[in-house]
Length: 103
Image (cartoon, rainbow, N blue to C red; front, side, top):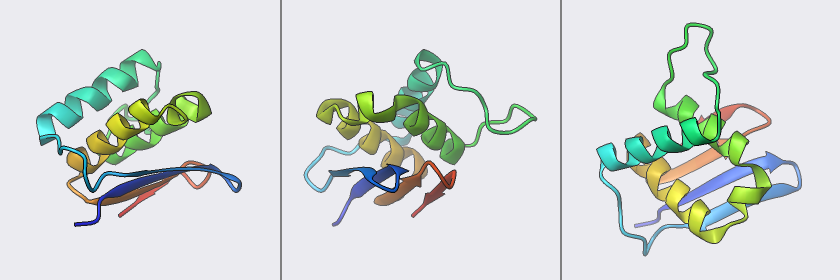
């Protein structure tokens, strides 16, 4: 089955990881990994209420990671595994300029 994550930072800057051969994470492990990254990258909630949806967390972690972390193949693979498992979708597209996550 096809499994991949694409993160678009700008019109000419996109990162893609093919996860077809990667070991899947369970939902809780993926959620914890995203929580750890959210904290370590000093991310802020998108919503004024402070509520952080999983899709929001994927988006702000990708934005905070920027080219430095997204350019690291190991980190990108871990991010992709966590994003697909947390969102329960095999294909995830994160569009940072549009602030959108699509499946």
